[in-house]
Length: 121
Image (spheres, rainbow, N blue to C red):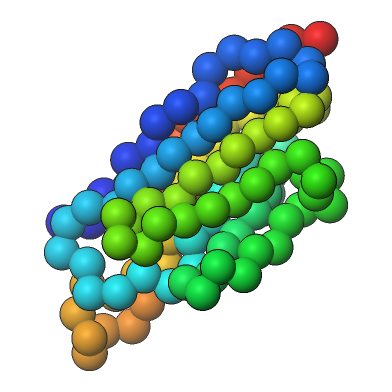
């Protein structure tokens, strides 16, 4: 069974920093794109950052220049360094990974359980 386990998050002041981490475990053959989404109260889940297996990244315009997404393929993990935090960054952050459990199976999207990030003004 595949699991994505997140850590980090919590409370920060505006202008501060937080770091989120996510590790995949279980029977995994290969991992494609990994990334982070977030969902604020009353809003739809939105993409924050995505990183390919080769390290190419894409960011939401709202976090460009402030957030850095990285991954460690050997550890099957992805991280999100969040700097210059703003109150509008407050949301539940979800880790995401597209992975295969067998070579002959298609990629399937998996999600972490979510971690709360709250930024006070």
